[in-house]
Length: 408
Image 1 (cartoon, rainbow, N blue to C red):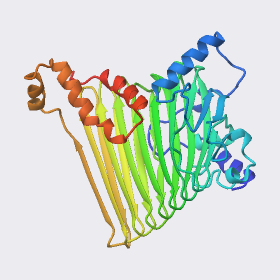
Image 2 (image 1 turned 135 degrees about the vertical axis):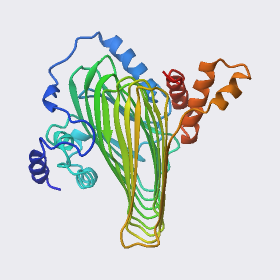
Image 3 (image 1 turned 45 degrees about the vertical axis):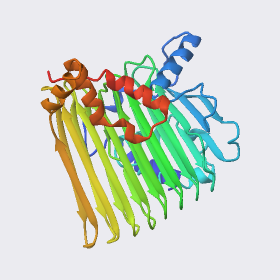
Image 4 (image 1 turned 90 degrees about the horizontal axis):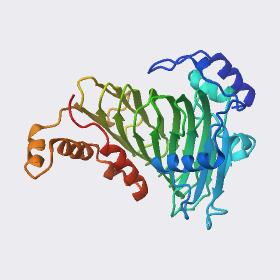
């Protein structure tokens, strides 16, 4: 898509609301890099490291394949790890717009006029990263990226592009969080391309603040024999989050495994879904969500499986658990098969209470009631199945340990 066409379509969508979730007035957020909160430089560095660590990004790690850190609108760190030069490329998006492998993919699977948020990212982009894993390169260590908001009321409009070449394999860990900011908006457009017989594991951890709104806008294209694994974790309170990412299994035998763990806290408004489209023969997918509704949170979980070939198989599972009388969960599974009678699509959705017999069993073995409830909650969320690196798993466990588990 040409730059002029992108701008024309985005301009027309300046006031176009998203299809789901609460609407926001974008005029309440700014993108002016000159507006800054004063803070001592060394303290900011320390706080940034601690905030990044809380979402699984270790800025002092000795052996990541690559690291990218953006705070507000400034790229603070961009480096390729020792031994990975010539195997991967990491570029700031605003410096890579004319690079061929970026330019030919930018806005190709996410439309700039999808809604006001994609329009804002197209018209007033403030950063992001572009990552390419060269064909045949199977990375032993993850690539880590942290996108952080430090300035209250900032609109951080990010556009990321991830390309995994034929036969390559990579794990990308993206942590999105705040450092001092009490409010703001994060718009994150991410376009991922998984090549023939390639593999991409994309782990995204969100840990925001009660005044922050976030609008991820993502799409993934998987080619023949490719595999895409998505791990999404929402930890802590957020003003609102709304996303409905697309996974397009276009190639023969393409596969996807999408897993989400959502912890609704405080007054969070959470509207999260996923759409998986099966076009390639032999394509298969599994989508699994685990949802905790605590305190006064309101949560919608949406999932759509679309079959466009007879030779596909897909399963959607959503399990929710309310642990507060002030919270709500709505599960909306959807299956679509048109003219493909041999397609195999299924879904299972359930919202259930904590079984009292489970609590009694653990209490009989010496746990206090709150300890028993917390243990059952962590087991229900089953973060261990995500296969997270140990440092991330420890951080997630610490957050989950503080998640309310009892009814109130």
